[in-house]
Length: 139
View 1 (cartoon, rainbow, N blue to C red):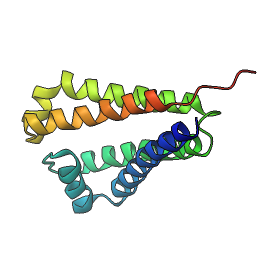
View 2 (view 1 turned 90 degrees about the horizontal axis):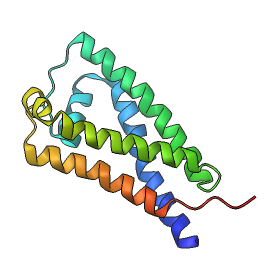
View 3 (view 1 turned 90 degrees about the vertical axis):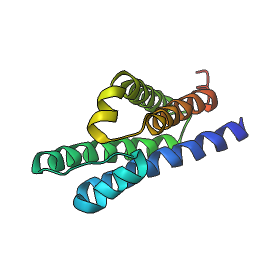
């Protein structure tokens, strides 16, 4: 159980930090955000005022996910529902990438290999969170 807690906490640190960094970069916006998008996703993005606003909206959600990840890190047994939510989010993101892969490849100039790597990273993180999620204590 102790090793499981250490692993789930390490995974939650990764989840939390990625979401926190993405939130900060979304709020900063501009070239910093587009460089990160290119680095992290391999996507080419042309910023418009509308897209800048949408990125900031997603940044607000990333900040909320980072906060929830922190809560789950502090007590992964008590906050198992947050871990379930993170698993769901990661699975939906991975599936979304596969379902809309042709659009993503065409619109963002992402290679198919890079898109599959990105989707796989979401699936792997979801699977690891599922495997190492601690069981709730019986009442």
